[in-house]
Amino acid sequence: MKVVTDQEDQLQAMGIPRLDPDKSPDLYAELFRIARRIRESERTIVGLLPTGPDVAVPPMAVELGFALADACEGAVAVVDANTRWPALKGIGTPRDELSKKSGFRTTWLADFVAVITPPKSDGSEGMRLEGLDRLLREEIQGFIHVLVDLTGFEQAGEHWGMFDVLDGVLLVGHAGVTREADLMRLYSDMPPGAVLGVILIG
Picture (cartoon, rainbow, N blue to C red):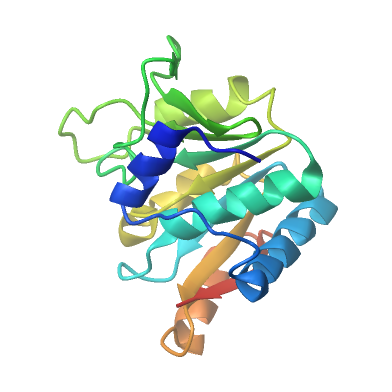
């Protein structure tokens, strides 16, 4: 799967280099295992919820998006849901697709992987869930799977407002750092059956 050079350069500048499966076979195998689990679960919209403010979800979300596209052989989107401080806002090209309904922008990184970023923040305190809700309900029909980075939502408990549109959640923590108590706290916050598992990075 070939990535267009300008997007690849933008990812590199943001500290998200593309993973080379040949150079990092063990890491790619783990991402592919998680991707296959998502595919087999038949959950379309999956949230990625960090266990704390120090967990960097966007790099892992993008790499998981590529692995998921390989696993399902279809189009996958990675949605930067943080409308206040979007981590992926630096990705973009003149060919991007801008939604007139939700205001979100779609940038294709490769033939089957897209990043969807929110419109510019208006400085409000809330996450502006209305546009995100519209995006996930009405504008993802062409994607087999959608990964939603929920960074920032856990700090204000706003992930509760997402459960009507999410099919499941993966908790993302730091290997050797994230405590069992942190995981159990988040588990207790979720509706029964919502948590698909835990991803430990780093």
